[in-house]
Length: 336
Image (cartoon, rainbow, N blue to C red; front, side, top):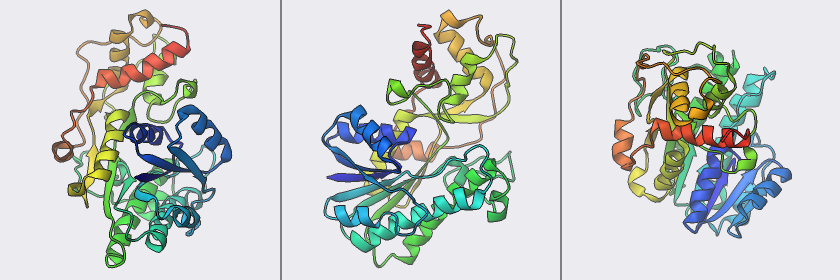
């Protein structure tokens, strides 16, 4: 059985690919450059992994050649390709919003054209930001909620354009299913994680600055011990291993058809990150912001009870999530 994984070079995607390969699936990934193909092929060194180049997912036929070529092989699709805002690029509509929406439309349209009956299940990597209420910070978010952000709001900043890109690309997928329910047979599930923590799949990818979510831990290692950290900025985390497992479970289990899976293991603050690092890596005490006992606990903003019950996953702990990032980073810095 083969799985098509779009956006296969991403942080979460590499962990999903690793899990699929460990379970003997054949994986066909899509990336935008040959350099990424060469690098990932070398890193995994697995004959069950291959790649196709899809250089521009804004084109509505972007995935046609890939689905046409592999239509008899692909049983599942995990759509993970989505843009992250680049510093300095302010054309939010064309470079982020339309890219995300058209990428979703193009992969679903390609399935409809070339594998409408053979693809069994499509899983889409969405985000908590497609669920939370951008206009109400006090709201408790569940799987049933949608971000009410408007297209016009989403064009105003890099922060809001990311919210909009995830919201409107996921809505495009659900709309596609309604409009084409008589022409495609595949089941559909979205995975909506909060900030995803965990180790980089490969040590060589550990740099001074990490991907957006892991940087919330990594940055603490570079701050002076006198730095005062926030105790009340509420964010939530989930371990990348749990996120990868949720994708594969959603792909395989028909009972998850039509579900939006909110993945959230708990809430954290910068100070709680520093507390965890100080506790688990005593050798860095005095070189990073100090631990503060009995610091404020951030307000819980997300309720993932329903998803956790459906998946039966016991989320990895906050300390484990922090450890996996910090250990890899400190090892690179020669501090272990």
